[in-house]
Image (cartoon, rainbow, N blue to C red; front, side, top):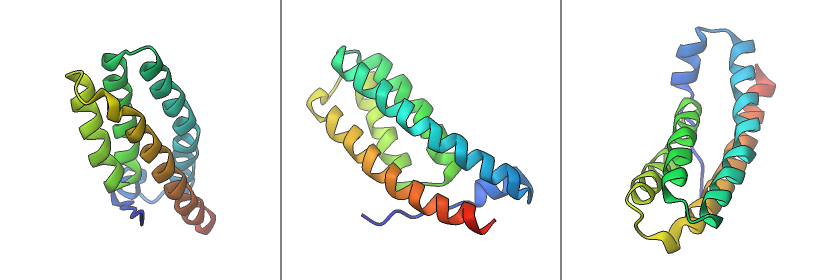
Length: 115
């Protein structure tokens, strides 16, 4: 799956400050493993409410980075987890989050190196 980044929100928020953009990219890179760990823990504990909350937090970070495909996936995960629906699909959503985040981080590293 090709990951497309729309960095316009990040660029507007940073108001041309390349150091701030780099810092936000670094924060996102640190957050991804934390989100994955928290998601897996919530799934292990059968805690769909916690999973919905984590998906919501992750969605905000992903939105700042402009990773459109992940935003939609996390919206779905947040909604189904909030309603404790399709629980057998939760690990699949987490795996897609991991794979797409890795792809996005590769692209974000390229962006960061050019700033």
